[in-house]
Image 1 (cartoon, protein in one colour):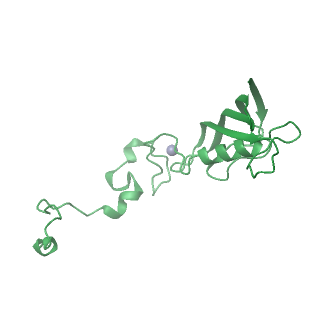
Image 2 (cartoon, protein in one colour):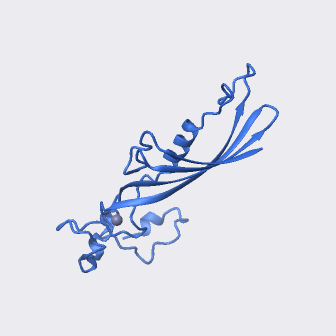
Image 3 (cartoon, protein in one colour):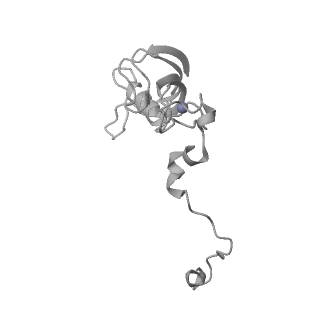
Length: 166
Ligand SMILES: [Zn+2]
C-alpha cells in the first residue's frame, strides 16, 4: 500500500456551466494505492476550487469542490475492465475530471438565500434589501401570486371533492 499527496494544476477547464474549475487551478489529490490480486485499487480524495457566477445575482463566486472515488485498475487479463494498469501506470485524469464535473452545482449561488437581481433596476438585491418585496423576492414563485389556499379544501379523499368547491 502506498499513499501519495499530489498538487497538480488543471490543464484544461473542468465543467462548462456557470461555475467551472479553470485551467491553472490547483488540484489537491490524496491518493491511496493498494495492491490487490487483480490490480491496483485506487482511493482518491480531490480538493479544488470552482469559479464562476452566482446563478441569481451574477457576482463572481468561488466554491470549494471536494470529491472522493475508488476504482480498481486491473492488470491486463483479457477480461473487460473499464480501467487497466498500463505500463505500470494508472491514469487518474479522466476519473478526476468526471468526478469533479459531476460535483459542480448546476445552479450555483453566492449564498443559499441569494435574492437575485431586482427586475426593474438590475441591482443586486442582497446589496439593496430595501428593494426586496414579496412579489419578486423569488421569480420562481411569481406564477403562484394570486393563488390562495382555501380553508375547506378537504383531504382529497372524497370522490366528489371537486364538486364541493365553489
Ligand atoms: Zn447571488
